[in-house]
Length: 605
Ligand SMILES: [Ca+2]
Ligand SMILES: [Ca+2]
Image (tube, protein in one colour):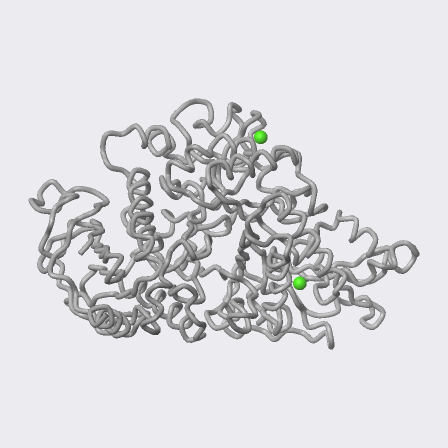
């Protein structure tokens, strides 16, 4: 007993436990699936075309599941596939429980779910409650609610402003995020203005109306009954507007005008991140807890671009009044070439310190609330365009080794790059802003003609990656030598093997010297029972650098941690032939170890 007590005390002292008696609670089998999974975000239209019409579809996703399983994907995050006029890539929905034929039928969706379950994989779908399409029957009726008795119920389904008070001027100066024009549109039928924070064809639903909230809870149940494991909730900061006094938003004194950023000319105090938007999420969290869905925990992911303080509110009022389980952390998307250790450490530290300040009790010994690291998505430039190719492996490794659930955007495992916008067809250009469209480049499956295995059609809705002949799934898997795709598979296998360390362990960024000049990055995950991992990377693209590590306080436990003297190399992003020691499987001395330009290593110690 004395020995056990000493072990417990040591663990408490090292910050890995809140109290000694929690040791037995660090049981990975008790941790909810979404805290040990990884997400793979598929923009369906760009992923794989099954019927040769040049657009990706659900049957294409189904045919790719063996590949996704092979590369260690556990949970799919799917872009919208609902019935839609496709003015905004399917984020303009005209029927929330019907399919868009472009992507397939309801039978296709059901087949996808069952094929996923067969492979022990999961599915999270996009949920878009802030706005519908203007072709939705709710909107048709809301426009006619004052004149058609059967439409009366829909009168307050959307955000309307009575124009007579404003003499046909816009009710406020509010702007649309897409295009930067007025966020108001006149309805000649209702003779009022409706609000649209996004496209004119995307009227804002009135989420203060309990009838609208009930509609979405029922839609939520519909998809849970289809076997869906969770929701990615779209555009959360825009749920509420200040509709009490219809005040103008103030000018942004820091605005520098460009053709693309008219929206930034105002400070959005009446349309964005209003008090209470987070609590709307609680609706869907509660649906997931209804008895009908017991036994299969659902996950709510929140899409919100906001500062850390606002972002943290999406977790919930406290650990028993939860809103979203995983608010996306988008901070890593801000990292640009040249990547610097201090930038990464600063972003991660700020976010994790905020998360830990919430002071939630640790469920099963894992830190709470849990976090979600986004490495790319359909609205931001491709990983390789933000960072350059050389550090793209290290960037992914960081997200996959931090405490939290990583999200990879399809194709970033290769990685593919932004589409060349000059090659996007005129028809496609009508379907969204160029700055966002280019990240929706066609997936590169092989070097085959006509369309890299994406489609049998030579004409595809988005162009192919310019490098598809060498950077594609088939070629990279068949290659004898290391490459990013094979490294990604290896990373996933390390993640699975060390999932207990990654779930329960502490985190430390060791100090690297010379301070302020070295481009060596060092991050360790520490657990006395489950093992320790060290990631080292030289972010310098030109020069080799030697490693000099010094102790630092850990981030979770707040305890001083001295760096290891040596470790066993589990994986390298590439092998530098001039190095005599740095090989996978070798035990190496760490102090003075030389990393070649952009070389990265994961070690156990
Ligand atoms: Ca198709
Ligand atoms: Ca809204």
